[in-house]
Amino acid sequence: MTLTRRHWAWIAVVVLATVAIEWSMGRSPLGPDGTFAWLELDIWSAHQSQRVFDPYTVSHIVHGFLFYALLTRVARRQSVSTRLVLAVALEAAWEVLENSPLIIDRYRAVTIAQGYVGDSILNSASDIVMAGLGFVLASRLRVVVSVSAVIAAELLMLVLIRDNLTLNIVMLVWPIDAIREWQMLER
Image (cartoon, rainbow, N blue to C red; front, side, top):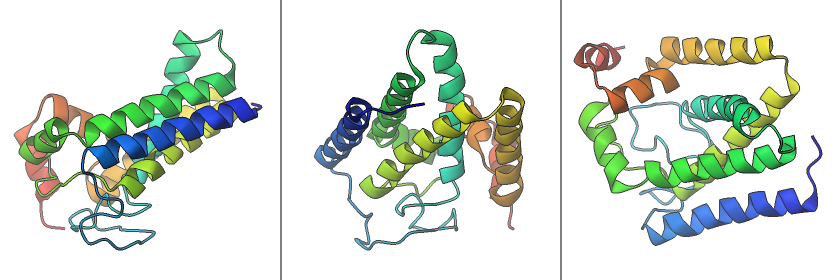
């Protein structure tokens, strides 16, 4: 994959547009506490989704793998670099939607994220970059390795935090009380 200046420019435009949109939505640059930090590992913390990295960073890398697979099917005629720009745009669109009152309220109502206040702008930008990283990794790995990496990531997150991309989608679309109860069991 060869990224030209044009590709880099489009990626920058997408990330900066996302930052501007989230700013206009009233999202906080660094989260409610206004402090910068690299990492938050506690999914129950008020700082969750406010830092550069958190356990859900893994899910955003998986997004990149999935976007690679999807765009390889539906945009096959486009260069891999152009598909990367499209994947970044898809992730950015998700970040804007995820931080809308509609999705924040849905997360609070049906998932384990009852105290979720949305992502900081910093975290959203990082999530976009991580999806791009996942896309690049998928573009360089054999299919069997990519599929294995996605399965391993999902299983690892299931063991570590009782949550992953699969459960996140299930709980947003079709909440299952038994899953939420299991996720909330004392650790």
